[in-house]
Image (tube, rainbow, N blue to C red; front, side):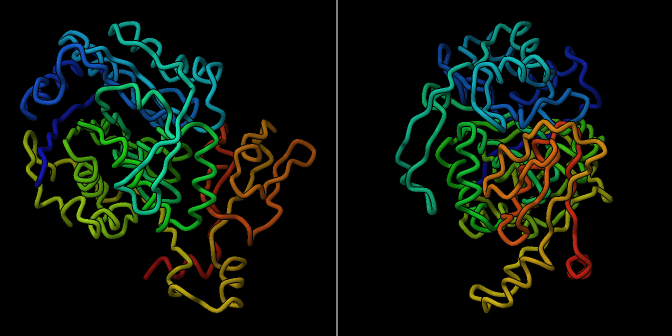
Length: 384
């Protein structure tokens, strides 16, 4: 069954204007009462991938979070704003994250709470394909309803990140690195992402596409104006809209390709029930999306010698700009494969072959000192 989608023009992050957009969004979707009962505990699962200012377009903008939280609080819901960002899941890290990203201000102005519960539980996931059990932050388990509040961004590993991938932040802290390590190619990782999203089962997903991020997302890209706020009942269907806006075919985005094959969403945004403004007016034809190719174009069981060659000479790899690196060590500390070593307070890749290309190092670098190098052969392959 196709869910409802709302797309509305929103040119800026003016708080009063955002309140009107959120109100109209709920009207387009059938009203708050259709999804939330008064008194229910609602988790707004925002995207706080790392400590970035709102204008950098890496995190969900506080204006949208404020407007959504205030609307729900005024309705009578018990609202908590939360995420498990990259790195350790600790109260100290969360305090700094909430303050720097504007979530502290959004909570204070709206009457919502901030999540500081860093505990987690191992749960059964009967609908999972790859993940029959999950380690999940208890902030999800303690909520009656979850709403994903994501950012429209490109992504160096998965090409695109939106509503469904936002739920990866329900996995606590450094446990995310374990999932990366156990799902080393983007195809298997996409199966895991779908499993995680299905467990969290957001009742609604909102997408901040006022200022998106293009290029080396999810943190090292550049802001790109789109001017829209989207929302929908099905996170995978909402991501179909996101793919259309960034002018990318769904089957070119591994998570959406898997979702389509798994029948979690249709194969085209044309099949969706969209109200509000015309999605075609928001398409950015020259949106910059990473073109990384997986080595699995070789087939499911390539010869070992060919696999070694690809890992060494064709796959992309992180490179470090020591001239702007501040030596914080976040890249090495959070590398799932443990292939980054700090020498004289500067990071070095100690094994190209063992690098799993999750690009967590790039994602968590506070100074954009990590970029993705594509060998010549890969650049040629990316043209086909």
